[in-house]
Length: 511
Ligand code: GLA
Image (cartoon, rainbow, N blue to C red):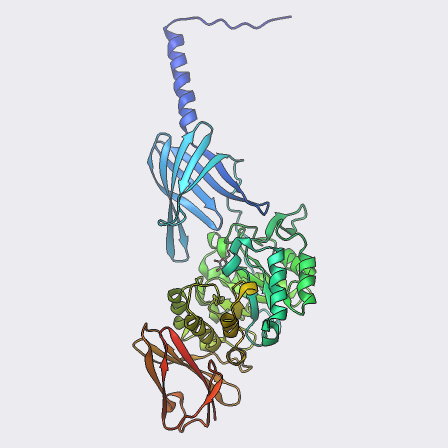
């Protein structure tokens, strides 16, 4: 047998060659060029992945970082040769969003540290090599030509129900949804009109070999869950995104719109909240209408009436075209939080959109925070009152199993709900503002009006409403206080009452 042998000859040439080889190998080891992924397994069986697709060019780094709904271009890198601070930038509508990642090469790993926001906690993770291209944004799909999607006939009054996000976020599961359905069916909410039990983000697992969406471990049987909710005389809602990823980084409906709509229909789903999220990385705001139209059409073809709730935070003046894509409701704002500042900032900024609301198609200033603990009872009454005057969807966002009687009385005030659900569907408007006092009114059926006297100040205030400001020529014969549940004896051209700090008095006037 022939043997190959390699004999090393020593000499100046060989030493030079070995030195070159060493430099080449060690610089290869330090170069962090490549596609890296840090996988964070989650208890629902899914994995939250952060991808760093990096290219080392001289002493700098270029490339992308992708996590949940965010896809950043690396616009700056400092440090080196094996430890860098990378600055990622992405356009979110017309706003730039920036993030910093500290990246250190340790052997065949990248040790990565970042903060989601400058003031939030440091997140540390370890990234390993990933297959080239994994985690990259998919190619942009062509968009349909615009047309008017026929009205699905749903939501003749603003939708009412419950949604999981505000209280449960990623902790929502089958058991919680069943428990909320039980509560709504037995605590008076169902009788008061609450109907939809809506699962928000984080239910998705992935797709099977046929591309069909499958739930994760938290939702072992979607059809069974829908049957359960229907068995309580209620309806069930689900959540997705037109992007490849939802806001929490789960599987979106991108490229699977019709297939997903059919799957929802087969499960017995009655409501879809469709959240822009990762679609922002593929489409401009001006293209939102075509993107939402695609799912509007898909839902109509699904074979089941499915209420269509648009969530794209009020971009591209959605109120002007939300109904054309088949939307039954459209978010007009970013996310609400359980605080007076957040609720009041959103709620009182809604003036001026009234003309876009009508039966079947509603402005949506986001879900209710009532009962989540961050506001006083008076503040939650302001929340409920304002949403009722705005003809807003009333989607409770608290844990209905542990609701105090006071919170239940706010959510189940049938006289306030009657204002929200008035069949004329005329959204209210601001009548006047004086310092921290605001008066809003809404026309309701039978020539009546609902009038709210809001005190946004931190001291009790006397607030006066003049009947003439409401277009009335005389004292209304009947004035009812909808929070006190009593008729008032009112004479003269105006009414003055004490309103608590961050509080409201809501009246219903009958001619
Ligand atoms: C966005 C929406 C929220 C909620 C979360 C879920 O932030 O605006 O209402 O659905 O996504 O990830």
